[in-house]
Image (cartoon, rainbow, N blue to C red; front, side, top):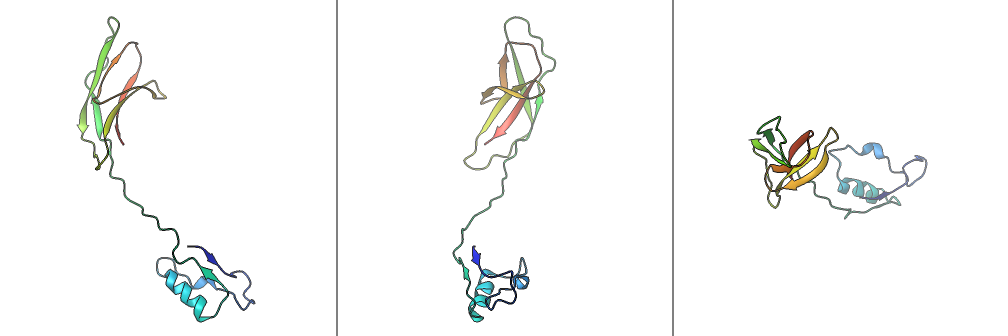
Length: 131
């Protein structure tokens, strides 16, 4: 809500003393009543900008590598992981798996399952993504 009022000069006849506002207790209606009952030249945007804040229950769970280290013999090797703790997937969300490499976790691939084919030796991590 936007409040337009004289709040700095307590000698002004339109002064609104904000110290009467108690966070968590005072309502917008209370402030509007103070303004109108005292005939103050002030305005409160009563409609305001409504915003709904929802909790996020998405949780990626955990994965455990099926094998490590894995030997690259030939052109490629398949690496995979198994779900340790199941992800929490809210309605209209999906689960995807992401393969990253190196200590900075550079994204290399995405997939519908936690299984990837790699063609180079290195350090890889498989992640669960709930989005």
